[in-house]
Length: 382
Image 1: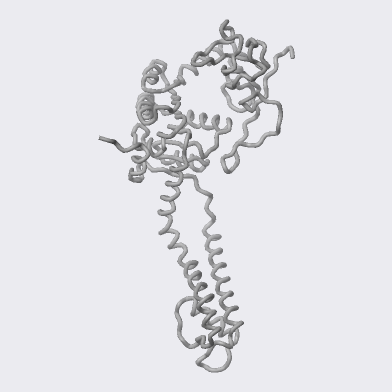
Image 2: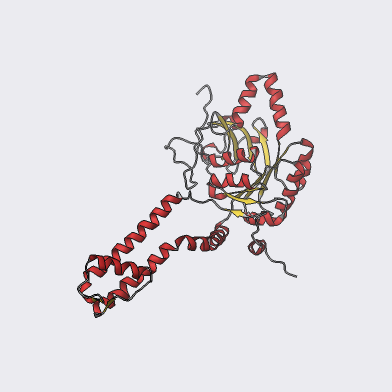
């Protein structure tokens, strides 16, 4: 029996408020400004109608007798646009009737639309949201899903944005509607719901995601999310955080490609800072994004092929060769090969926020490491 695909299943899921998708919106205008804008538009339509009647006033007949003056034109335009139509002033010439058909009638429709615009907006808002959601789902490919938007999740998002990832390529999943509202206000798409449920992850289009970051508060929740995410997406790179080190192997078995132990890492940093405060400062500098030192993975440039690790222009920590990670002092790390990737320490530039469209900031041109966009860190003897 053929089962429906994940894409089809995601589109057939009902949109209830317990787990819904919220897309970023533009900042709404003040209600007073919206009302004033609509009143101004209605006034402009009224003035245009008065002008049309005035220039062809000879083609109208007033039951009271006499030619039409300006007040009669304003009166006729008012009762016509409001669809009252008392019949005391009527067009009788062919030209006046033609202008009524071609100009006054469309202006009447526009006037009514402006007056009932608020009601129409309420009625069409649901349809508009569904259309935007459908377009968002159709265009979302190779994005990043962040499960949990607490301290760890926010730090991960800040790092990704600082590395150049656009905000519209990030989807936040969290069970708290207040947290998702805050994420949406920052320009991210959000899904309210329990990420251990497959239907919630399908709303985030996880089946087409390139990478998944799991930053939940509980380790057991992280394991369930990792299992569900791996079941829905076999190729995504899943990175998860756990509090206890003993749960890391279980999380790897559940499908995570990389596991970060937050409690143990913090404990080791505390111990290092007590034993050697300077070493602890350097490690903290490496962890913090946007200033000081930073770790960067980059490809080997053509000029470095055949050289040893120590002959490169920057400080190499490890060499990634295929699926093997070689230390800088490993004899097999040198000479460098064209397919290798280097893990290097660089001097990080100050982090800059993307613009309002989620695009990375434009920096002035300067010598950078290939594939990184940051300047190399020179050795002391240079």
